[in-house]
Image (cartoon, rainbow, N blue to C red):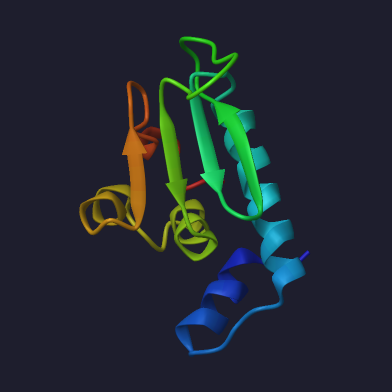
Length: 111
């Protein structure tokens, strides 16, 4: 699998990384998030690639989850690798986070 930092380098240089490599990196990093923050209180969405439920707390079963985090793949990989700070991404609208426990800064960057 391609290192997410390599994909970010491609974007930063004005290129477009391979879609399958982006998908694999997003899925792997979301799986790592679930490993460090198991639970079902927050739905983390990186469309169109994947969505997971993580973080302990109120369990989501149906309808709109109590907490949602959504962003594009480039933003998610930036957060996961530490190239992008959570507070900056939320402040400039690259991350949409709502609901209790939706602040993922305690879990990012991922190891």
